[in-house]
Length: 48
Figure 1 (cartoon, rainbow, N blue to C red):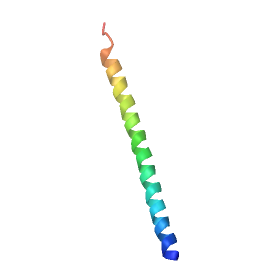
Figure 2 (cartoon, one colour):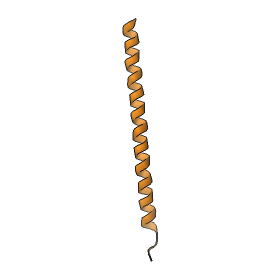
Figure 3 (spheres, helix red, strand yellow):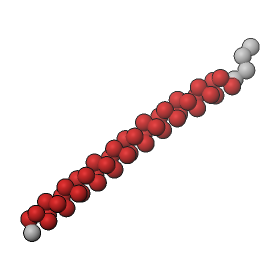
Figure 4 (spheres, rainbow, N blue to C red):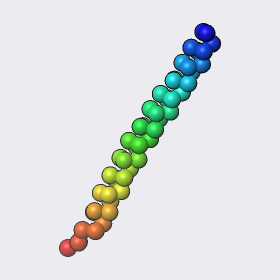
């Protein structure tokens, strides 16, 4: 029975870490996308 609890603990930990990594990557991608949007917006402004 204790090996079952250990197995579930490992699986739960792996899912938690995987989910956390996905959220962190999503945050980095959104930041990069915002930077690219600013670059495009700046490049499309008419220059005097």
